[in-house]
Each structure stands twice: as structure tokens, then as C-alpha cells.
Image (cartoon, rainbow, N blue to C red):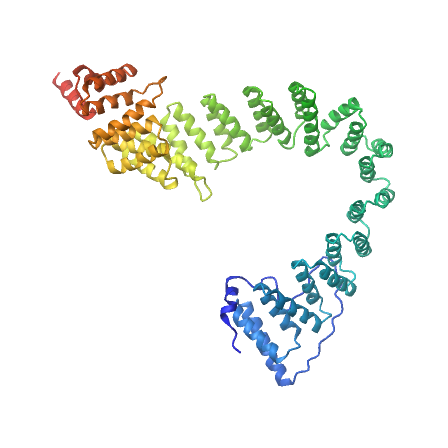
Length: 605
């Protein structure tokens, strides 16, 4: 029978037997291979030769990734020798990939039955039961496996976990004891038994196991602490305290001993002793930062419960941070506390600088500091910090962004342009599209200000390729096109997107109205310029919008209103020479016409 390729076609999409060799072998961390009985062939010499050919060719096709052909050849080999365990094993793996679990399991079991001493076959059956969540069946198989190879601690560990899932804790203890026989006693195994006894609520046995560790290691204070902490958790405080004092006598500077004593004093209400010991632990150079952080959290919680006096907690942080730090964890925790307490920004900035003194490459702290400077308009501090940060993180685009914006606010367009362009040179496939878009947008704005309109428009096009709905760039691009009377349909399309996005934005409405004006669609322009006027900021009036109002009203034959708007524009900005001319002559003139007229008048003089 020819193999049905349509059923196996899915195998061409995956490495079907990437983890299954034709002759698989079990790799455990510690095992002794059981003796494997040789399965003697009952085939005739000719059939054996035919079988060998088809099996080896199947293996070759499988290694080449031709899984359908391999399966077909395995099937042919199986028909020649129906008692070949290795064929059933390989075919089972195919059925497993095809999610035909019943046949897969049947074939795995068949392989194991035909060669019951092959450890890999037996183990695969057990794994299949685990994958199917048939844990009782998996336990039977692993019991068989561990009887055949009692020194395989990997299999014993799996068996212990299976018993845990079945909540058969006595069998779990028995299995851990078997592991202990193979590997020898260890802290890990003892603690595993303690946890099981805890689940069994057998406190006596749990205590016995922990006590055995302290008896075996009388000079190791860590085992005494382990037992003491367990006793403290079981409200056997006097016994725990005795062990802690014993450990303290042997190692008075041991941070773990001090922490255990701190827990004891806290549990019995001796707050003054607990507080004194807490400070000692925090100032102990041997105390790890995670322990310090835990104690500081506890101190903060207690302080909040007592009224929340932040000066006490800040003093405690300062004491800890006076010791040389291996990382900035504690300094960062101090910042987080100060933010929670909403302390003054200047003091928070000092704390952020403390973080950066310890870890100058800490981007999160640096950006937090830069944001604070930005809100306070401290542009020189931003420039100084960005230049310092770029020594540690030369590809961090946010630093180039803050740097460029600071120079831009200081009206240093050349430095700003250089910063943004350098940031753009760091763009890669992982770059944030919104940020890249903003970089190109700022480059476009600066280039247009410097008189490089074509380069500015190219930068805007690049910006919109990264983010086609960058509203501010769509507005600026559209407005500059309208001023130069270039590609007005494109300008109108871009501007309309901004109006749809923010229908109450006076600037966007003004741009759209002005584009319609340039297209000589005066009545439509009036609709949108009126909306712009209605949404104007009355505190900071816009001379440009009032000037546009006058122009648009004039073209709609509302000349008296036009003069009023030109007057408002001139009052808001006395440098608008064309507007002054319109106001004086009560007549519209475009900027281009005015400039020509002004140059002509100047040359005639």
C-alpha cells in the first residue's frame, strides 16, 4: 500500500523528529544502564537483508528531512519484520506529531513490549502518560523504570513529583529516601522532606529532619538559623531565640544571624531592640541589598502606620547610602519613596543624582531627571546631562531627543539639527516609530526655518513614513506648502486629517482655512477660520490667526470686519508690516505682493 502523502504533509513544516533519534538513548545526570537483552532475529537471511535495507534507508530519509518518504519506508520494514521494536518506536513519534495519540501510545507500548529492557522505550511510554496527564499510569511506568535501574536519580525525581501531584505524600517521602540512597544525604533533599512533612502536617518529622542537619553540621550557623527560623514560625520562640543567640555568639557580624534575631524581637514586641538591630543590619557591609530593601520596606510601612514622618525614613536611607554601594538598588528605592511622599522636586533630583553617581549608565533615572529639568526649562542642565549620559549609552535616542530639544529651545538651530541628525543615524529595526517620526519632524521644522524648504519637505516625508498620523508634522507640512502655494491638494489632504483628529484645535483649523483660502474657496475658508477664532486662547491671542481672519473676511466682502481683525493682529504683533499696510489702506494684499511693492518703493528711493 502506497503511503497517503496528504496525511503526512504537515510533517514537511516541522522538524518532526528533532529530539528523537532513530536509535535513541537516554541521557540522565546519574544513571547506570541496565543490561539489554539482545533480540535475536527470526527472519530468513534474505528477509533480514531486505529489512536492513528499508530500515536504514528510512533512517537516511528521515535525517534528510524527507519525513513522508521515511514513514513509508518504516512501514515497509515493519511489514517485513512485525517484531522490530525500533520500527514501532520511530513510527510512534510520527503519530505523536500528527496528534494521533491513541496509535502513538499503542506503538510506543509495542516497542517497549518487544524490547522490555530498552530503557528509552520504557521511558517514552511513561512520558507519554505524563503528557496525557494520566499520572497514575505514569507512576506505574516509572516504578518499573526505577526497579530496572534503581540508581537513576533523574527518574526517581520525576517519580517523586508524580506522587506530589497525586498528593501521595508517604510515597513521596519514600521516593526521596531512595534518591538519598543513590546520591547521599544533602541539604536539598532534607529540605524537600521537610516540605513534604509540612504538607502532611507532621511537625515532629519535619523538626527531626531539620535537627539532623544541625547535628551533622554543628559548626555551621546557617543550619542553626534554618532550624531557629522554622521554630519561630511554629511559635516555639524560646527555642528559636536560644539557637539565634548561639549563632550570634559564634558569628556576631553575620547579617543572616542579625536578621533572624530582628525577626524574633519584632515577633515578641521588643520594638526598641528590633529597631536598633535593624539599623545595625542595614549598616552591615555583609548584608545583601535584597535584605536591606526588605527591612527598609518594613520600616516604611511601620513609619506610615505611625503617622508617616518622612524625615526619619530619609535619614535612614542616608545612613545606608553613606556606605559604599555595589549597585543603585537602595538609591532607587529612596527615589521611589520620595516620589510616593511627593517631596519637593529639587530633593528628588538630588536623590536621582545619587543614583547616577552609583550607576551613571542608569537610563531610567537619567530620563526621570531630564524630564524634571525639561518641565523646569533648565535647558543647560539637560545639555550637560545628555552629553554625560551619551558616554555610557551612545545609542540611546532619548538622549539625542532631549539634547536636540534643549538646543532648539535655546534657539541654537545648528546644534539642535546636529543632535537630531545624530539620533537619526542610530535608527535600527528596534527603534520606536513614534520617536523616529518626531526626530524627522524636528529636522524638517529646523530646515524650513533655515530656508531649506525642499530638504524640510523631504524630512517631513520621512517622518510620515514612520508614522503617517503625526499630527503636528501633518499640520506644519501642510501649512508650509500652502504658504509657498505648492501641491495644495496634498496640503489640504494632510491638513484635513489634523482637523478630524482635533476638531477644536485653533492652529489646525487655521491651517485648513488658509489652504482653502489659497485655493480661492473663500466661503469654505470662512467656516473653518470662524471655528479657529471660537477656539482661540484668549490669554495668548494669535496674530497669525487674526491676520488670516482679516484676509478671509475681506475676500468674503466683509471689509469692516476684516479691518477689525487686521487691527487685532497688528496690536498682537507690531512687526507685521504687511498687516499694517492692509490696516492703513483698508485693502487686502498678499505677502508676496507686499514684498514686491516694498522692494520697488525702497529701490525708487
